[in-house]
Amino acid sequence: MSRPVRVRFAPSPTGPLHIGGVRTALYNYLFARQHGGVMILRIEDTDSQRFVPGAEEYILESLKWCGIEIDEGVGAGGPHAPYRQSERREIYLKYALQLVDAGWAYYAFDTAEELDALRREAEERGEAFAYNYAVREKLATSLALPADEVKARIERGDQWVIRFRMPENQTVEMDDLIRGHVEVNTSTLDDKVLYKSADALPTYHLANIVDDYLMEVSHVIRGEEWLPSLPLHYLLYRAFGWQERQPRFAHLPLLLKPTGGGKLSKRDGDKMGFPVFPLFWTSPTGETARGYREDGYFPEAFINMLALLGWNPGTEQEIFSMQELIDSFSLERVSKSGARFQPDKAKWFNAQYMHHKSDAELAALFQPILRDHGIEVADEVAGRAAGIMKERATFITDLWDLTSFFFTAPAEYEEKQTRKYWKGQNPEILRELRDVLASIDDFSKENTEQIVHGWIEEKGYGMGQVMNTLRLALVGAGKGPGMYDVTAFIGREETLRRIDHILATLKPAE
Image 1: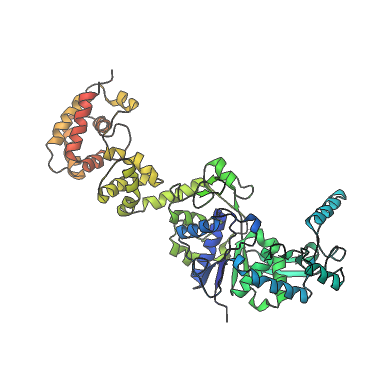
Image 2: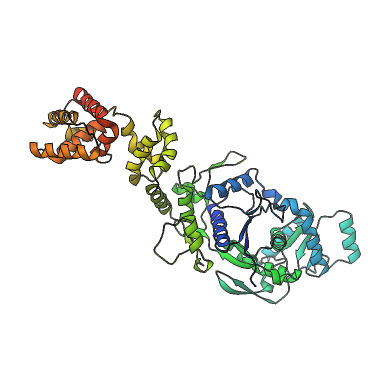
């Protein structure tokens, strides 16, 4: 019988959550939901030197904004609490010592200075220093020192680490749900540190294995930067005798720069003008970074865009709701190669979601912008304006420039349009049109269009000539929707007032 699906997203609070991390969380979430499983959030804060205040709160807020729901873990609680590794520190030493007792690990007393000296000596010989089977019994380790000396060093408070004793010349066979079967010879691997007495904390390698086991994680879905660690993790499960409970692994491809060369970074975003973090971030030192939320992206558009960076649904469909992503997602269709980030495609996704939003949804988002410009109108009015122009917008913030003429009469007239249309007989034609408009009782779009078009045909005027002159009067520029959308929106009295204003104030072009 297969195990219940339990996945975990386990970020380190070392700064803002990169969109690559959000994608990892998303793929875990989609996989869990599709299989009726559990999504766990674990904070891996064992690296005290790199801990950044505020980063954990940023992670939680980012996941909430993205709609990635946590079933168990930090912020949600659960049967395997606590879910911060710094609060689980007393758990790990027991397991590290278990490995020492079983011969799978050993104490090492080397100082940082001694290790630096060994690295320099190796470099002088044109070699790379590796702490492995070739040197571990020649250094200050429990494999080389007498047992009583090891005990004495520990009792007098000498600093030590526990290193994994990597077997020599063995083949580790591994299976990855994305990359298939992988084999590595252990002689190419070094003896990683598992636990440090200096801060009484484990390293990632020990902590994540122990926690995944205790939290009954069934699948580990993480970035490909952890692929080189997979042999060690396989061997740790073997060393503990936990092979039956070993999770299945899947290593996700990198998010690449828009140019395709290398991992996407904040520097790329700064250089090319797009964010690489979900939310705006201010570091404890005052450094800031842009966020998709503050740049005006809808969370559902952001998530839709991210989902397709590395995963292919196998169809032509590009717009997915979260539920559709859950229904369609599979690790089998995740690419092995890196996914190149495309800033313009991110904007395209946002525009698609903008175009499909209802007037009521748009009104709620547009009202704060209107109030910032001193405009107080009913939600229905704000929604109508946004609805008319939404097909031309990419972001909510675009709407004021696109719709301002609905709410404020032009204070000046675009020079190019004025030279082109405010000349000859056009002002007098507009005066005639004013009288036609003044006689219309039903000022709906359809009725006004029918009456005005009939008048234009009767008089033999050019349609573009009349409409563009009217546009100059009502909008002040050569932009906006159809003129009957404008007249219906601002109403008869405001239409006539704007025509009267241009006739009274603007001198015709010569």
